[in-house]
Amino acid sequence: MDMCHSHCDDAILQNKITAIINCFIQSSIPPALQIDIPKEQAQKIIEQRKELGPYVFREAQMTIFALLFKFWPKFCEFRSNLADEEILALLESQRGRKLEKQKKTTAEEKEKAQMKKSITSVKSPSTPEGKADKSDVSSSPSFTGYGRQLK
Image (cartoon, rainbow, N blue to C red; front, side, top):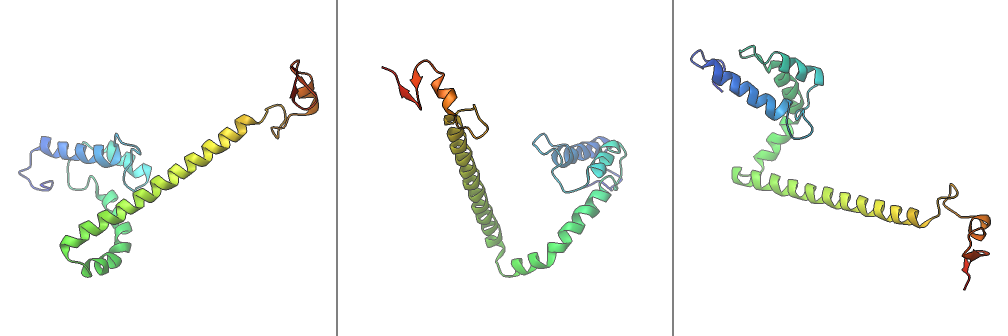
């Protein structure tokens, strides 16, 4: 970015700040805060967005870099074992497998919920366990005893 350069127009700089905020701090795609920084820190950036200068995002940078720094040695090892062209393909395939697993898990959870719902809807709501007692059934004009229909 040309943020720190004296020849940078203030309007361009403000547009860049706004773009970063709209993408990562006040995203229109949930969750609004797309980066792992405290909400207070995000609010402070929003409040100071008009203050032009190289330090608008400094605290957020330090927070994110502190998190990323922990993974840097593993990433370097990972990268050293692959050619540059292979890295993106491998990461995308891993991401694809992870998304498929999440979709499968979500589908299974929906199926279980649907089964539970259908089982619950078959039970009578007259008792907490969903079981009807003899008085509930026999008091109905079209039933006698434990559920034999009258002809």
